[in-house]
Image (cartoon, rainbow, N blue to C red; front, side):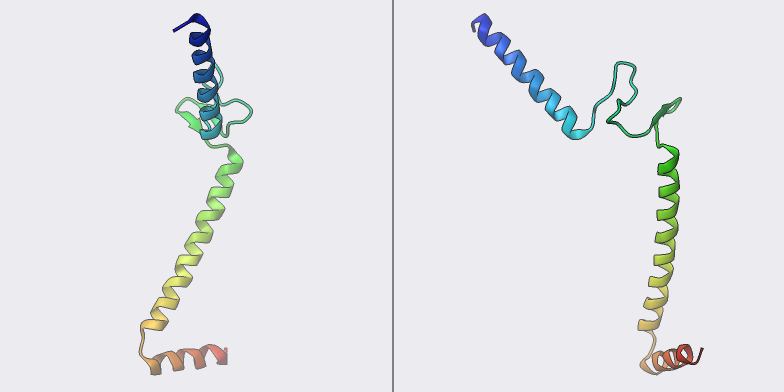
Length: 95
């Protein structure tokens, strides 16, 4: 292998490695902190979500809880007998 080919191989490996790091989000600075493209904040325990991510997570958890509750009610109604379903619908209409 000539020196020119060796240098060319090093350049190709470095380029491919950089592309893979950019594609899969492993972009960190020398101090281990995410660069401006990374998400979150580095704390004592490593990478921690930013406060706005925590609010979004809590909102989504509450929405999932509400949807699970609605699904549970719908499952209960559909499993019951036909007559019970009709009575439940009539009772809800009367409200």
